[in-house]
Image 1: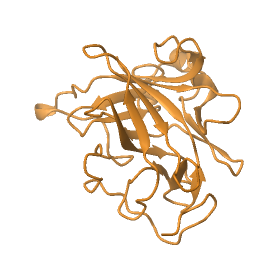
Image 2: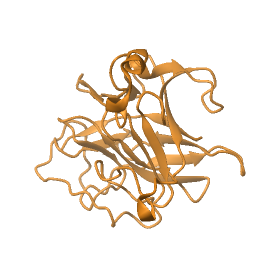
Image 3: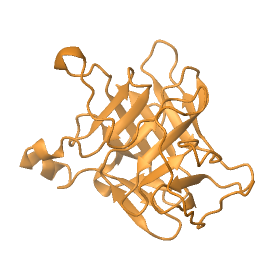
Length: 238
């Protein structure tokens, strides 16, 4: 089988599969489809709130970072006191939930409630929605404050999973793992539950290397290009 390498474009259009993920893999939800869940009778979802933290790096080793107004000092148990880009449910218009009745997806929408914030709150948050930043190896950096989707709720302490980001108009969905019926040879992400049993859950989610190229490959659904995009992310149940 021919292996994809960074910079190679593909002529086909990748199809997102919502029901055909690999056996045992968390369920994938497409960007734009994981809006606020409603229980029977129109009541708000009971899905627990979460917080994403992406460790700040200065050496370019992590290709997924955040906007300047998302950068803060992390005091969380997994990341210690290092700087991190923080996306906390209810802060600066961010909506971040663990969809326990939707396949275990842990989703964040940085701009979900931005329009309803008071001007003083927007100013305190830097004047614009928080955003994820994708540092593509071709030198381009793309900020996205749109919905970004994860499937990270494992049944075991450690497992492989799949991940999708909304990564801007040029890329579309940045996909890790077997996220559709065509692109099935991308390396999965590693999901590790860190918190002891009975405590609020913490997950570390990180890209993994392709066994042939050694690169952490992710696929852009619109451009058809596969990039080396390593990252590490922590998710906290609040």
